[in-house]
Length: 112
Length: 112
Image (cartoon, rainbow over all chains, first blue to last red):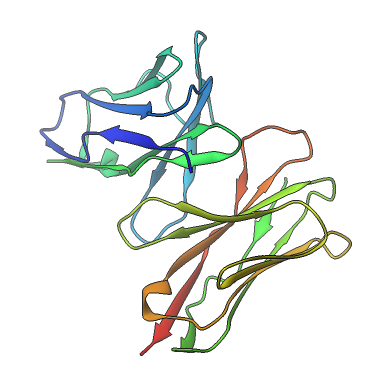
């Protein structure tokens, strides 16, 4: 299967700070990546579609100014959680498209 | 609203038994179906996909698809405690987008 990495795997930050999460496709190029969040024991929630070279497409109810997505190359998409608050604490997972969706290992964000 | 439905479980089976996980979908034109396994605290991992009616076997896993009934299932033979996880059914919409519709997952417990 295809390899997708995420960095960092875990981050703890103070309220009001911004956090950047990277998603990389290691052995293939991905023009499309997806960003999900998942609360404990809950299902995946799609946040946005990241398109290389163009603006991300956000799902209804997801604040684009709070969750900034940049897909500047065919192997890298970043999600920046701006002015993080405790309610942003969650498990953030990216996926990249080759023949199907392959998920990164996830980033656990804790906002104090 | 396109939907994918799964019983949340938990489905408990004894070690060595066959575990049967089921999924129904509403988009009749869907062509591609995927099963992901998600261990607690980890991201989803693709285990099987199926496109054609009938059965597809891969080791201890068999995916079954019945498009007329809009039903897809996953059988796990000789279940092991290490198979204990949440299994997510995903459907690629008839529009062809890679924005899959995910079910909420079925939690499987294999009892030693």
